[in-house]
Image (cartoon, rainbow, N blue to C red; front, top):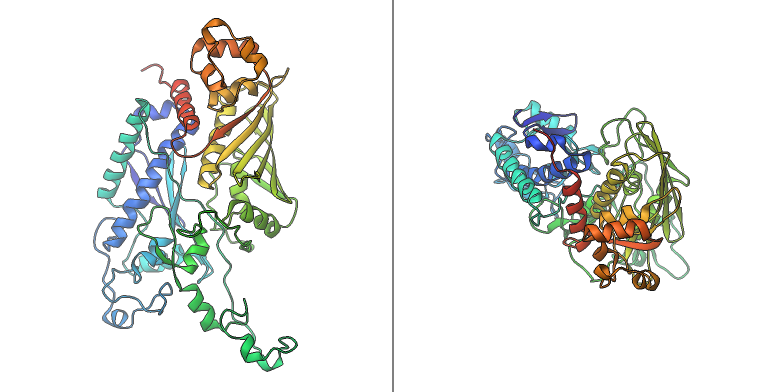
Length: 488
């Protein structure tokens, strides 16, 4: 079936056209492929928009002479747009039609959508729906762009199957957008007490107060040019409003400063939360122990950028339909998951912390299931890896337990975790394995894996999430080994 671009409520979807052997792979491998499509699709769409092309690759309907003469943009410092810029992008890459477009991968498709816009208080797709009625339809990817995207994804797929190094999918992180600031009521500065010995005019000087700004001053501060890296977008010259929406500073000190907690966009009755695209299937039930804004604040300080509760649920590897309980304690986020996969029930506990060296890590405290189900641990771990990389977490740590009901000591090691062998284990190694000092060295051969399965012990393991790490290479090698096609 050829690849199709299908409009959706707040964006569009790419389906079909995947390699024939992909259908025989488990969900985590299929999702990896569609993450490549998502990444390449975002770049291709941004290129089309920069050229002023619509969803079919044709030139967008030109703007009127009056609009061109008085062109405006909320994204520029002056509030003015370039009369020569393409339709729908008066500020070029700053424009919300380009800067708010994002996407996510599912096991059978790539979804693209426009994020929440703090200026209009809704998804930017609402504005683009109106423009669609005016003859400027951007809800889709052009045929030429689709061919280029699918060819690029196929090349990565063939390289991955051959065991070659492949760039990890870089699906943009979804951060919580700020609420719309309403102007209601009025006040006068002469009715405010600024403090003993402080004159009102002095208190209003720029840089002396975090508040007491007029609407014009607030708008100017949001339009202030800053450097920020937006995934899938060219350059770093954007503004303070877009940096706040994406929460990904593009320059600054080598050591990141903790971010100020950002308010959570309230979900109004009968209105979907467009700050986070929901996953397919039965929705995940998220239960916050404390107020959402408090948990989001602690998580934002830990991670260095805004996050919402759905992001944290992804970190736990929760499958669709799971119940996820989230709490914030000093210096940590705690996550408990309980769910069901077919007839098998499972439970997991996760924590997000920073150690004394400043390393941001996800602690996989435990994972237990009512019965062994082939691929369950692999699917949960795959979701954890994707979410942790997306949110900037550097490492996963786990107590790999060997007990009557748990085999993490072997399974986590097979997934690519690593750690130093104890002196007792090293002393008991057979001659053919006597040179091994790390669990990864035992896992490199069938002899070593068999020996560890029979003689291994509980130990602390870590998984390096940095691009190009040996742990990620072992994880992808394991996926290739376990998902080799069988049959015709």
